Length: 214
Ligand code: DX5
Ligand code: ZN
Image 1 (cartoon, rainbow, N blue to C red):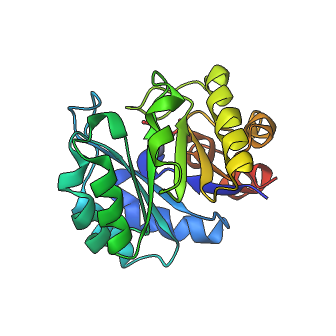
Image 2: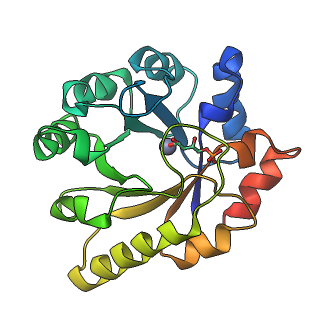
């Protein structure tokens, strides 16, 4: 069954504690935290203090997606703040391998993310080293964008490589995922689906979560 990781980017920023507590009652699996620096992407969200604050309100896994330049400078601090999974975009890292090791050495799960305009090739050198491969189905930067189905080809390719090489990483699809495209996401080999607006803007968020756990 696909795990659902709602992105708190679509929650009310004045009620973040309530948002993560709600996610538990809605039976979501993972909390997806989108960190943006205004440099790698044209938007700024939140940083380690938010992760640290949320850690006190939930025992759910915190999946921290870093959309920041030079992520290697900050991965350790996100681990210390209470992240369980830390992923970043390798093309803006000066030493991605070292950053992945640093996350591992903190006892956390690590991964790389492939933006919508990036080829899967940027992630290939790390597939044996990562726990999670994020394939983005929108251009990183904002919630609420429409799903780019053509990006799923990268997930299919990664799934093929994973099977062939008997590799262990999980595949997460991030961006524009909703109940009406979840079957495509699953068919592409996804293990985890990130969904921001499809959960937080839903009339019945618990139902939205359940309908994506297919
Ligand atoms: C985009 C973020 C996504 C996104 C998900 O830069 O990484 O996690 O906010 O939100 P929706 O599901 O609304 O696209
Ligand atoms: Zn994300």
